[in-house]
Image (cartoon, rainbow, N blue to C red; front, side, top):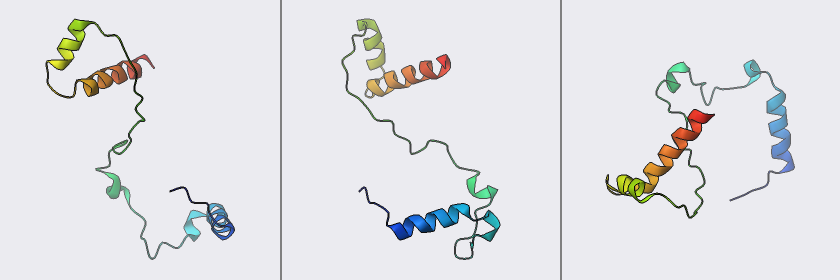
Length: 88
């Protein structure tokens, strides 16, 4: 759902953005301390957009990926992502 904000909502957000942190009333929602984030996992809910493509892979590499059972495409994606991150 892609909803537009009303002029009133936009004005309220601008006012809150301009307000110093110490002036924000947190009485109904207490500020979370550092302990609230100690078990947080960065990117836990991040799901990149998948794109279907055709790729030619050597037969022995495909056999190796498939030898571990279902999920060989996910494993291939993980290997490519690790290579991409190491190259960056």
